[in-house]
Length: 107
Image (tube, rainbow, N blue to C red; front, side):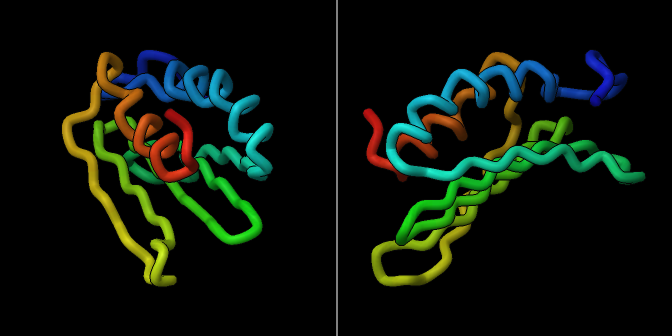
């Protein structure tokens, strides 16, 4: 389990995980398998990774406590695309989750 309020953190990963938990029913109802993984493992920046898998798609989102996020997904042409989010804070942490909703067809 991650330590809340870790010194130097811009994003509280426990709060971010709560946003993910709120979105789980919608993703599951859309037939997506959801995996959530914490990756502290001796790294200087902690992160949380969300993977959404459907019959024809996989979307990966990593959010670091430093305020960076990386999104990778397969577009309609079968090519992997990457999007980077900078300067995410607790107040704007829902931005990458809204992008996940766009990619999965949620309003």
